[in-house]
Image 1: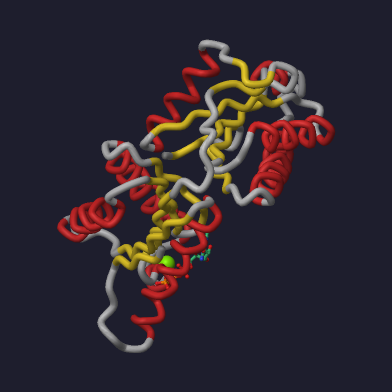
Image 2 (image 1 turned 90 degrees about the vertical axis):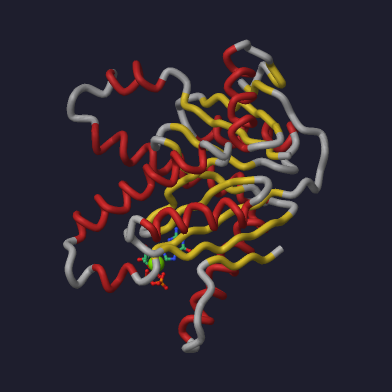
Length: 249
Ligand SMILES: Nc1nc2c(ncn2[C@@H]2O[C@H](COP(=O)(O)OP(=O)(O)OP(=O)(O)O)[C@@H](O)[C@H]2O)c(=O)[nH]1
Ligand SMILES: [Mg+2]
């Protein structure tokens, strides 16, 4: 079971207009500081937050209670002038958890009205979550023949392909910076990763490595996924034939 919380800024669009036209730098600074605070508050509770469009955030909140959400909301309300809403959903797959969260807000199902928290909360603790950490093998070598902008463009092409592939499996992909991606999933992680890496190989595009981690908290799952990825690098760098997928749980 996956629990997700979507955090959104209330009435952000109209507020941005109040800043006038010379606003882009202000918005970038505001979004970055908001993201920093949200990541800090959720990660302190062993959750992990992913950026979605810079003004909306997806927190993986397995094991995070309503009281935890209220505490985080109070904290954010005291730090920022703009109000945020949170909507929580849980389901067998990450995509369905996202749908449930979406439905909770749309149908105004309040979990806590005072602090703008909507949705449905999974009461169960210690449910497992799996994260895939995907990273391009040796992107540094590409810098010899491609300029920084061309590399970014190819990374975004890869992101688009990845997001579409995993969405068909009801798993959610997030770009985490550099040549890194994380996919939240629940089951058949290794099989999904195999299928995706094989498709990429056939198209002779970039080679990816994929670390898989399963844990009872989002941070633990991410830690183990990254550990798996680093294990692939260690095997490669020791001169042995490297696996392109490695799993730790
Ligand atoms: N989000 C995130 N970014 C990372 C991480 N590790 C590295 N990066 C970013 O990825 C970029 C590329 O680093 P690497 O992937 O280590 O470089 P590489 O040449 O592809 O080397 P290998 O991945 O070991 O084949 C770095 O400049 C960072 O921006 C990570 O764990 N998470
Ligand atoms: Mg890399």
